[in-house]
Length: 383
Ligand SMILES: Cc1ncc(COP(=O)(O)O)c(C=O)c1O
Image (cartoon, rainbow, N blue to C red; front, side, top):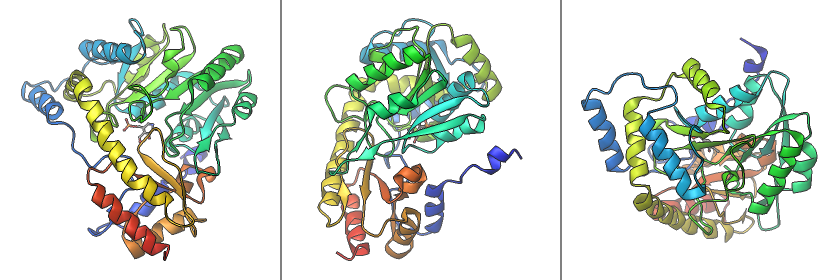
């Protein structure tokens, strides 16, 4: 085994989940997914595809009609990207890895804004990149902010890729349009690629149908790759379907990479994706309203607990909070599971910057379940 692989950290979220394995009394909010099943029309489209016998390989870049539908969907949110800029991938995480494989050689520098879902820095690390972490920091209300000057100072002509996830998992932090413009202008000067993980773009409680996107301000020739997923906006985590929006001229190379990784996404899964896009305008606003109800049931209740610091996020599906006694977040999260039947993700899973914090996924249809979780936390804190 390569030393790099041996040195990769295991998932601390899994470590906590394993502590509660086989227990049906645990209220689990540790993973980043809703407890709601994929819409029926999407499941039906995939089932129909299978029954038609669509069990064969497809084009590396995805079905032509799905790529066209994704172009149309993107156009509705951010303006028409134009032809030949979209590749379908077998999940958002594969989209991220494909982008890294396209851009990063061993020894290259990748700057990552953290804390963040651990897969983001792990992927360039696997490829032998040098990772520079630029930390967000909490203000007094518990909202995490970017020190823009610090980020700009970290990205130099030696930086191959800037990796940013906004809306951010776990903090809910989102780049403003002005910040995006400063970052884009700077990366144009340094020749740095931006890989923007925008899988939570629709999980957005601010103005408009989506969070600010780099696509709104970039040209097709900018060194920008945007990573997307069907997982969050269409309740399709188990389907493993995502896509990339690439600059002009990169599609053939990405097609080769997809060939060597998965060769293509399964056709019946892509048919599900097509059905999801067809119902997006009807479905997504209702989903966001349900997520918002979860957020509003949970975040103020957390913030009201003495000693707990928690802001209400504008994007993403997580409450991110500091609690007394959680300085060792992994030990505290394990204790919550074992002694109180409450399953949360430890902040340390998202890097040392998240230590002392906890992540709680509020994508639950049942707000009473969220409130029952708050009661358990309250007991654990002996309030
Ligand atoms: C920030 C971020 N990016 C990408 C993904 C990948 O999503 P998927 O691989 O399910 O498409 C996730 C999933 O949790 C995520 O949180």
